[in-house]
Image (tube, rainbow, N blue to C red; front, side, top):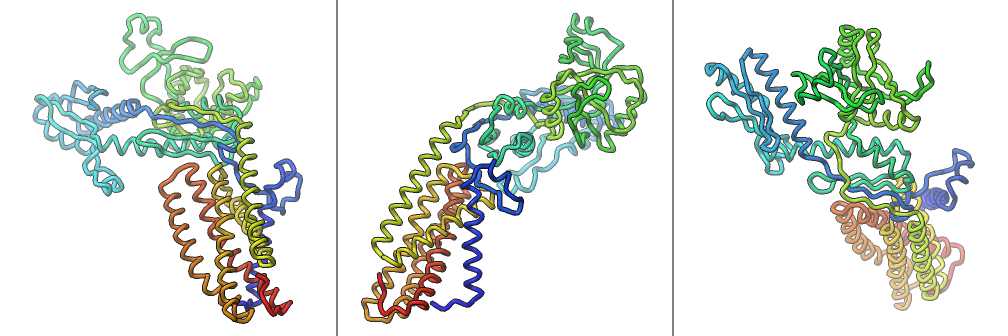
Length: 539
């Protein structure tokens, strides 16, 4: 057990030195690291919300809006399906409170054919949801009164739809938050329809809320020039196929637009802020995919001289006149933007639209001063704990205590180095995990040294006592650390946020402490024995 092959010694030294090297950047400020050569490690441990301050926001998705949009899509699917089969219908209505779309078939002879065709709109639930014990379809398609057909969203279908919308919203929010350049935001689902967002180090919380809270639904729609806005407002009934949409372009308060969009934001593949070459005002340039460019070019070619509106979240931001066909699939959006507004709009368009609007249920802002106090308290706790442990082990075991303390220093370096490489987020519970790791690392050495002391008192030689001490203590050390490691994995699996941070530091700390307490100290002791040839063990 005390013999080390040369390659093992080299490997242990490389691991130990690498841990120290990768942990060193955490001792310097970001400004200092920026001026150092690029080949020097620059990664630091990210500080969590409770250590450097930031924003804590809890959002709730508007399920009713999600249902209304779904019902509109179902109504469109019904219209397309019946027209394709040349089946006459009437009374196509949406009832959002009942989650139902109803349609009446004109000719009773076509009723069965229509019912069969509309049942194809309802699809089975996804396999993942069926695996949980929920079975069925997204829609219940039944016969109503007479020749009426009812399509109702099922509870299971809504559950699946909300789950998919939440997952999509999380990815959209993540892309928007990444535009701020912050490190390691926490974005996770809570409950059925809520999203928790924690952004450490954010300074402009107002801008963050504005950017995340925007639904970001973009539409390009034709302006109806055949009827007047005043008449539609006076009667309260716009012409069929049109609707009144409020405006933010500064020219008029409302526009009368065609209900059907020419192209939607789903066809966008890129959006970037820029400046107009003629007026030098901030604009947003956009680019469609192939299908969107073809459709947009076809519509603009057929409507030269007519205005069209760019609608964001059901508000007109600009309504230019089509001077010539736009056939390249690219264009620009202008609307008296500031540079920041143009940049935020491009972020919204690139990140995609939210399936439904998000409402803030809970908002907390952690100040940087509170984070600094937490860091100071954590440092004091870690240093005090380390000093106490180092003093105890040194007094109890003398020279072997020095070996254990050196291994403890390497252990902490390895732990911080791994956290830096992983770009992990350190929180207050994470600091608690580091302090616990310090105690656990020395605990393994205590087991080894006490076993060596017992073997020495039993009359064994120096080499035999040390060899037996490390061999017999290994099983106990592994048993204790494996059970703790399993508990930490369960915490990481079932926990969230700070609990996971504690579990991560604990898991890494267990691995590094076993390596340093058993392997590193054993190498130190082996080299000491080889060089000094002691006649007794100073322990």
